[in-house]
Image (tube, rainbow, N blue to C red):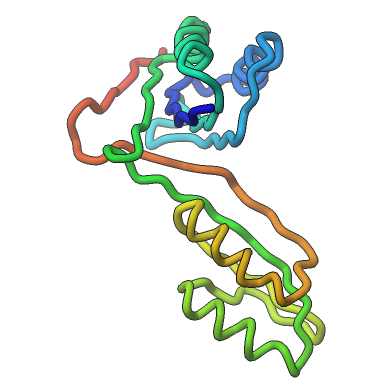
Length: 168
């Protein structure tokens, strides 16, 4: 199984995300992660989809998504030509005795403590998926109470091949 990251520029209309995810569902394709947000142009949204499959399936996904009416552009974000980031919020059980250890670990990973209570901490960490996985694995000595991850957001490096879709 291979993994590809697709970047879509879509018209910012109601139901566009539903139509895209519906295409995956109807075809039996799996979405590893999906993120969406408006761009500098409020009429256009950027959707980043991470999908797994063999070359045939991944090529088919790209072609099928490109055919959707609301989709203005589809690109594969190749790892060597792109920057990927993810955000994770992690709630860790940490009383007064264990709090210092969690904070030290967070500092090593340049994570931020964004909430402190008597019994726990909420940690914010951004970076590549490998960094976040490594941090979570090192927290295995502590009790993770809750975990929320955004999925990958990405952009192609450089200024070549930028698309400015015209949306009426």
